[in-house]
Image (cartoon, rainbow, N blue to C red):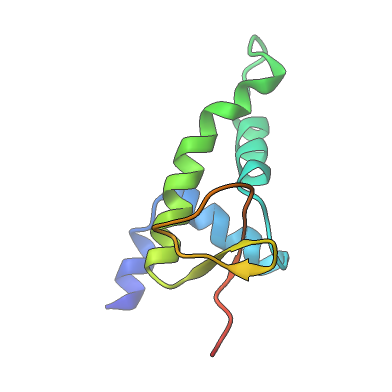
Length: 95
């Protein structure tokens, strides 16, 4: 059943998980920038990546609620329902 769930992930959630397999942690803006660069049209402004920030944050919250990743602020894991400020994502650390 989990295999079926993996295949139904949003493409942005998949990109987050794939990136975290290669990196220890990543900021939401890094994911948004890479998406923006990959999908940028010639006529768009260089900061067009910003349109991906909300979808990236939404998928970050979804993955954290599912227990697949952790949201970290200043080295401490934060509650996905109650945090502020600059955060990073990392794969869930085993207890």
